[in-house]
Length: 212
Image (cartoon, rainbow, N blue to C red; front, side, top):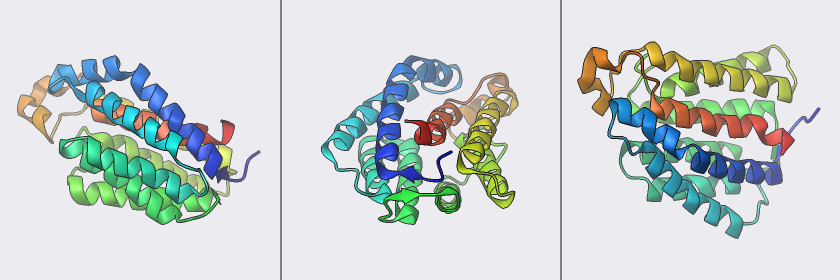
């Protein structure tokens, strides 16, 4: 079993993420259309087409550099809160990873803890507010627990993936308290949050990275 994720694996996994976002753009916009303005999938797909181009231009020499490419492109190409949130997520991952050629479980815990703190600091959402925080926080908690229990990397990433998926699914039964959706009140119950869903696709790419 792999003990680390190399920069090359991270690079491949993030290109795979670009493909996933493209494939899921209609689904994301459908989710967003139920309680938002319906353009989340379109915006995310446009952004990650740019990410793919930038990744293909770069040399995956270290993990931080690969993640920084994504963070900069997201920050510069997605308008509104989502660009700031996902841009911050990737930039915090990049800064914490540094110029290492590969990262292990302890590195990933530190990276995602920093990313979560960054998202919380600018977004002001908390767990239970029906946002991407529900996905991200659940996954980060599971990753930290797995590390504390001494699980190997791939098993820890499996826990990370499953917890993120559960966090995403939990938003269906929540009342939206942030953003445009919050204006709809009780009508938001029964609809899965689009941001929580795109966040899961991002986390899934990291969970799959040792296998690419």
